[in-house]
Image 1: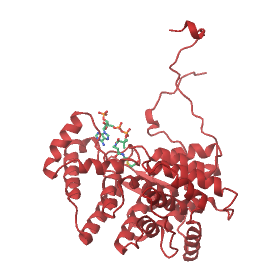
Image 2 (image 1 turned 45 degrees about the horizontal axis):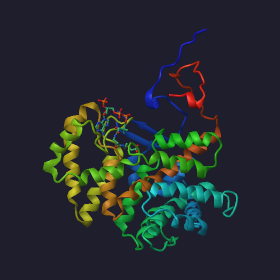
Image 3 (image 1 turned 90 degrees about the vertical axis):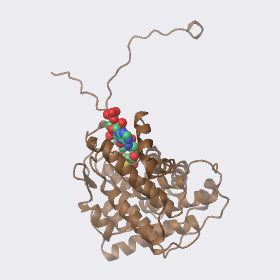
Image 4 (image 1 turned 90 degrees about the horizontal axis):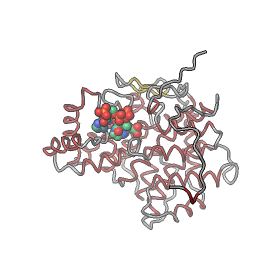
Length: 377
Ligand code: CMC
């Protein structure tokens, strides 16, 4: 019998961790599909609620199903008072992703099989995510929490609850499209986290709180926040090449570029760039956009042949900044959308579950001698 030990694949690159029908990526050709639908088509013709249903149920909803789903989400948007009180006690200078983690945990304690026993945890979590983010963003500034408006969709409600003024059509459209673009992306770190935590039969609130922790890191969702800081640190398009040379010389990463799977431009980056253009044409451009275009060209020249191209996070921050959204709320917006994918994958995991319990390659020692504390080093 062979005793060959499998070799380690750092980051499990390319190793399948599950069978999934939720989304598909062709990283060479820059193709992304949700349940077989091309992202370009969904971005142009669909909306976040419809895409959420598609991810969760596998098919586009009928008009009746979509109306029912929207009503269900509207009925779950308002946060339980105890959750608002908990958010109001968090440190005002804490990161909103940490508040979202705490918010999911509190929501689970208030809702799971208890106060909100209307039954659907999935609708509850998806609907409450923008409310949690907007509530913390206001409470930390000492402002009142704004109640959701049942006439608005997810994107519109978020902007309303965050800023306290009704969003314009273009703003609502741009944010809704950004939510469509971020809703799922195969076995990324946060989705894998969701599946691992779900596999222990933890509840979906815990699953999503854990996935938020994974998304927060700068190599994953946290990159969008860093991209803006990076662009703001470059004085003008003319300063880009020198900045890039220094960054690469110091072995720094250029945030918003590179991807484990895409070896060409991320199709979501192309769509977000178009949205940014549309937004700037209607509301006035920003100098950061020109710096971004110069950086994209310079990175292409230096790193393009290594397959390092803009990813989804490169243009999202520029768009959110133009919508008046604070920088540390960018990654929570990613979570507001990706929660749909996490829960679709959680469903899939639970339908045929086996707890994740991978192996390891042991590199430690054996036979260590125990010594009494006062005789140690
Ligand atoms: N800038 C400079 N060099 C890069 C970059 C970058 N953005 N991305 C990859 N490289 C280089 C890297 O230094 C390494 O070089 P070498 O072989 O000489 O050591 C090589 O390319 C392979 O990179 P890696 O980090 O081992 O690749 P990975 O597949 O493990 O990581 C990544 C993918 C997305 C974490 C990485 O490209 C990165 O750190 N990018 C910057 C952060 C970022 O924009 N993250 C958002 C990802 S997309 C949205 C999301 O998932 O949330």
